[in-house]
Amino acid sequence: MSASVTVRVPAKVNVQLAVGAARPDGFHDLANVFLAVGLHDEVTATPADTLRVTCEGPGSDQVPLDRTNLAARAAELLAARHGIAPDVHLHIAKDIPVAGGMAGGSADGAAALVACDALWGTHASRAELLDICAELGSDVPFSLVGGAALGTGRGERLQPLEVGGTFHWVFAVADGGLSTPAVYREFDRLTPDAPAPEASPALLEALRTGDVEALAATVTNDLQPAALSLFPALHDTLATGTAAGALAALVSGSGPTTAFLTPDAASAQKVADALTASGTCRTARVATSPAPGAQIIRSAPEAP
Image (cartoon, rainbow, N blue to C red; front, side, top):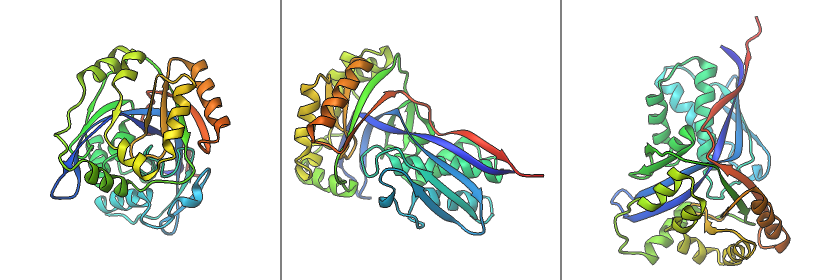
């Protein structure tokens, strides 16, 4: 047993998000090419008398601290499977933008799951952890796995992808958030006859070879028109990053964070500086991909 366990977990960007029509269960079939990026949250689990969640960092005032938080739900699901009480204090140190389309809440769920498994010594298999992740939400399995993967179904069925190099990104964090369900409803309104989603062979090859220009030519997000419809100011952010030299500009997931693919680290800093100076976003962050999934970075042993 440990006195505390801290897990670091990455954000994600969708380099392709192909969305099909709404299914009878309300979800959408996806071809979702995930790429983990080096912006991280950290979740620390320590023993407690009851389940509680605390949070610090940018946007932490928007993070629910009750049992709707995916970190809390992760602890409850793991505990229920192993017949123990979910008595744990989960402290979330936020650095992934909140409500920004970068799977910050999903990342926290995956991190809490790994942390509680180590804290409680439940020794859950990888398959069990992924099964719990899928129960928590469509993006949570990828937060556990990291790297790059193709997500199908509603995004939870993952096929790992090879990445042949390092990609340089800038993420512009918007003032305000977007509700993912609202973006999907707008997508349904705008695209009533969406075709079945398929991954782009050209995009997968660009990832495999590490060809940044080929990747820039193939990134797509079917939710982007819906996000722009609900948050028109993002047009200006995308235009600013493109004018500053980004090879590709797109809304990240359901938004409103926007993502800019650049040729190298110097170009990324130039784009970030231009975005920050433009006033079209709250802040701009530089990051590289791919990044590893949820991993334990600190484990303090219990005192003898």
